Length: 330
Ligand code: PA5
Image (tube, rainbow, N blue to C red; front, side, top):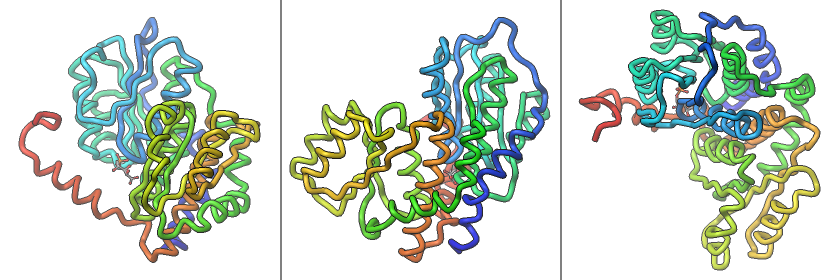
């Protein structure tokens, strides 16, 4: 199965280019701008919210919050933009936030490949981007991220997006496969621990999620500088078949180099992912997400598991469907 499924990663350049050309339906924006932006979505769709949050920290003067739950916080009112992302368009947590945002009179934007979210967008004139269907959410990351940035631009929120250099990097699939093979080498039978700084936390989370879903393995995320105030102690006497994967920006990232060296001294196997500094943030997040995704597929192949099937998520989603009462209430 890996042979076929890998195609959904190797075409990311084309997928991004196609989404760049996709029409934004019901384009509209709030007069006077927004008090804040809430990005709602789960899993492979929700990771886009993490990336937008980091972009917002550096480029916006309004808050960007990420909601991976049924309910949006109380302070999200009608001056806010709620951007909801669900690849299937049927994820109950995400749909619940959309309904709540409508009740509060927030401005809305949404992305899906169809489903109930598309129906709601058409019915209520929500600003909407439809992405290519027939894939799985996590393998649609470029479409969801490019689509989200397009929607924000229509809403008057301009953030730096995927550049031509980033597109070109996504097209260099031989390089990505080579980096993925290096990353995957020796990971079979080990629990990956993804370590990053705060700016690159979406990559660490993405790494964990990819190994959870594609490789069917438990994984862990640690973020610096917080790591230096708790997790660092755990490595003094660590247990278990762990391998640390440390994201470093270029060859002179002193903070992350400290973490990598410290972890090596503790005796744990360490893999350093030295990211290309010349790529912009979105380019970098997408390119290294591609590398991690391909590495997770490689280890899935070695384990003999099918990366395309996530039967436990299906089980959880059917539990939610059968849940009586409003989601979010105990
Ligand atoms: O990658 C996946 O398949 C999951 O993490 C899904 O993204 C998650 O279950 C949410 O579904 P959707 O993206 O369709 O809203």
